[in-house]
Length: 180
Image (cartoon, rainbow, N blue to C red; front, side, top):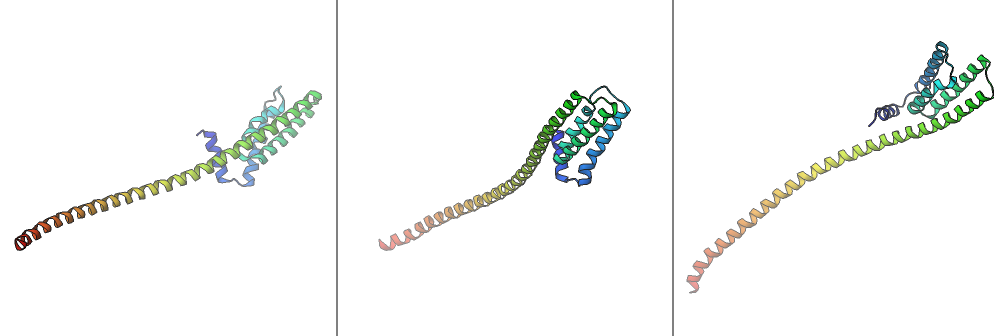
């Protein structure tokens, strides 16, 4: 099982509070915005937020992913207008980012739900396996007791047969002499 699968399963099992579920992505967006201020690059400002969008959607679900997408789009728009360079190409890039981001959120949410369902199925299978092992050990013990009882019954049957054979001989010999 991959580490990402374990991480998603762990987060999904613990069901983080809304403060954590939305606070962590908000802090990551804030951190990436701070990075953008410290090291301005000649790239589209929204590209810094794609890893945050991916991580937030995988770890915390659709709501957190939507929050990251909305905030990152607004911040990227602000960066474009702050520089005074918002033109048709930039608007087109932002629209593509929103579209691709929405698809990423949908895919990550589906993957996350799949992992959660997989974890639940694994837990049910583990419980069924424990029950099966317990039943198997009980069945093995019952089979051993039945085998011991069968052996005892067979031994008793052989003893009875020996007794009847001896008694038959012991009774026949004196009766033969009497009958003549």
